[in-house]
Length: 309
Image (cartoon, rainbow, N blue to C red):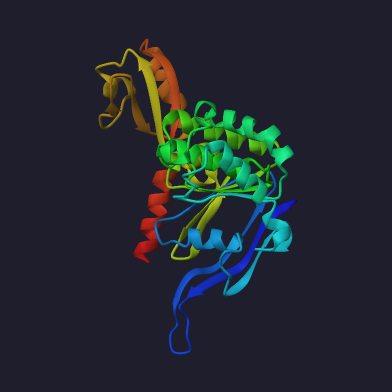
């Protein structure tokens, strides 16, 4: 992968290890790479090791074995941390500060000057939809408002790599759309976004590549398309839906029918035959859509199989 931003090789982390005790292995031989300008999704059930992996990448926890690098430097080095933005899960911002003051404070902690931030803070407040509440104290914010300001603090110093841990938690549908648009804009600018989320529909919509972890190991990695294969079922939306559909299509068993169409298990060659029979019967075809697994369905199937081993 050209211009690699994150590089992890044979990474392992064991908690509570002693001479007489093996300890708990939270990360077990993880290797991955994330390139510049990509949106990378990290998925897994509770206890899969996702949070431990992020903490190692941020330098908050030291690895037991293997290596982790950001921008070609060992994870945790000051030279790389200034180039990173981080939105933790269930973060806590100073309640006595206003939203605008929070962005100024965290921007300065990330090495930016007051004059530099005064020019950019209003833009980010506007971008996350908090202009009318920017002067209110954070303790007065709802969970969704706190999450929006939290996202802005992760971005205000314009980092090259962003870690977002449950970024849409507590955010309404309008807010989730704003976050998706922000992530898409960051990608266009060459910023790398690393997302950990339980909302798999959101991950499916915005991520280029996804890693699924369980029991400290990577059990699957690939693009969203690779992780959501076709099922062999095709949906036909037609008008009208004929009452004698089984007879018209010469099917051995009745298909699954609703008021807009029906679904069939067919291969690509059989789709053409179905189309010909529908047209011969005077049926208008509105849409034909191959049924794919959703990312959520694929995720549940993989985790179930892993747990059964």
